[in-house]
Amino acid sequence: MANATYDVVVIGAGPVGENVADRVVRGGLTAAVVERELVGGECSYWACMPTKALLRSATALRAARQVPGAREAVTGELDVAAVLRRRDSFASDWTDDGQVSWLASAGITLYRGQGRVGADRLVEVTRADGATISLTARHAVVVATGSSALVPDIAGLREAVPWTGREAAAASEVPGRLAIIGGGVVAAEMATAYAGLGSAVTVLARDGVLPQAEPFAGALVTESLRAAGVSVRPGVEAASVTRAGDGTVHLTLTDGGTVEADELLVAVGRTPNTQDIGLDTIGLKPGAWLTVDDTLRVVGEGGTPVGDGWLYAAGDVNRRALLTHQGKYQARAAGDVIVARAKGAAVDDGRWGRHVATADERAVPQVVFTDPEVASVGLTAAAAEAAGLRIRVVDQDLAAVTGSALHADGYTGHARMVVDEDRRVLVGCTLAGPDVAELLHAATIAVVGEVPLDRLWHAVPAFPTVSEVWLRLLEAYGRS
Image (tube, rainbow, N blue to C red; front, side, top):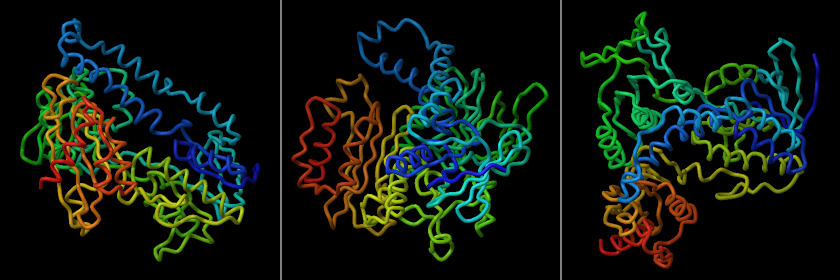
């Protein structure tokens, strides 16, 4: 058995693990990462990058058709083969040579194989050839193994070999009929993408479309999906699934109905990749989400750090915010605090401190790349009320903003801000409409900065842009 020692060992070389290791090395420590699949992780090959590439071409075509002059220049339909080729390029054709080169240039050592915690500060790596390498960490081990698609216990579902988000993101052909179980972000985005690519799509959305978002967002996306020919069936569940010899998937529904499809996508949630990483050797439960403190140290049931605080978890695996950008944010905090503790420096762990992931609590930004886009940050009205805040909700029709009318004929959208009345600051914002993703960071800064509404009056939006919605929201707040 080969042995090596580093200051920090990271299990998982996705965006989160890469960023932890990078911060550690920049801070003057040594780092190794262990990866069993492709360096770059889920986001690079089976999620963020390929899925947004699948969506972008149809979005651009819709946008052109909404502007006279450009509309007349569009003479053809979407070139599906070209869309898939572009998607392949954004997934680097599922090779990680570029990412591996980056690791080397950053001074990070890569070990390929399955990493498992063997004891305190010890990670054992089993390579594909069965050989084992033992890595000892002087200061910290970081679990950044992410999550995988959850496949629910529906009769016959696993035997039918359904798609998860991975297969949907990487498919080489567009199915004639696609059924989707789920109504969340992945389900809504893939329904949008595959309808744009020509599939006849059926969405079985037990809890509705985008149930965690503001209700108007889900309603607008549902209306748009139906206008695109998607059959959206809220409140409906699959009771059983079979796949016939010719490949056809047959779904029997809880309401007695049936659905047939050429492929079935399951998009109902995520499960942590902690089943086979040696958690049992240190008294933790394999397959469970990892609980962390504000500095991302793994803690036990009593809230006490595992061991003497040598084990950290960042990204999806700690279930704080299952988004790539939030995972990278956690990675920066974790990497920096590991360096600080290793060097005996002060730890800045107060609210909004350098070494904590405060934004995970109430300032998480997210964009759903549906038609229309849904961009949100902070709390929904319902979540703010559940948190005990005294709030005021302000709504604005985005179509009434001058910049929206210039942006596209028939622009449809809606904006909402949620105000904490006791502090008179923004605690949540949701925008639904074409290209609203580019408006989100302004809202994020307002929420994170806890900018008083009286000061926001002085942040004058340029005319005529869609950002004028901020002025309209503040005007509506002042009148209410």
